[in-house]
Amino acid sequence: MQAIEPIGIIETPFQSIEDMPIQPKGAAQVTGCIVVHPQYATGLKDLEGFSHLYLIYRFHAAKRTELEVVPFMDTQTRGVFATRSPARPNHIGLSVVELARVEGNRVYLNGIDVLNGTPVLDIKPYIEKFDRVEQARSGWMTGSSEDVANRRSDARFG
Image 1 (tube, helix red, strand yellow):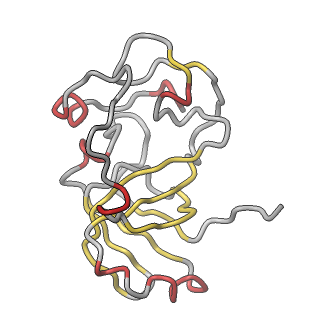
Image 2: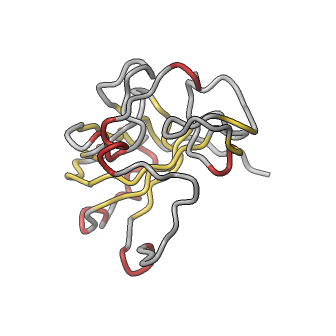
């Protein structure tokens, strides 16, 4: 089995996990950049036609794995796979962000909620015809979009 290696590094203003937005909704005004390693830069061709991207990355600051966690938007213990917690077995994160522009091997983003220096594993375009789900359910998560936008992280998953 081939090891998964980062294709680049995400640059953001967040130097610490404390007080970061917990989702891109809380980072609407935050800009960042992916610096793609030169050997992968050709893969960025045609990316600028998309408005949004999926970023798949490694929670490099996560030190623990838990199978049950108390997520930021709840007070009850939940199974980790029913949350977005970084304390997962493989410490893999996913964010949908707005693409601002591509310049060489740099991908500029809006709405980024990721710790500076995070290794990015993959970039995929958000395609509404493939990805939009009309009648999705959000399980236990009952917080409003405003609640999500205003919630900040703490040290519980570091």
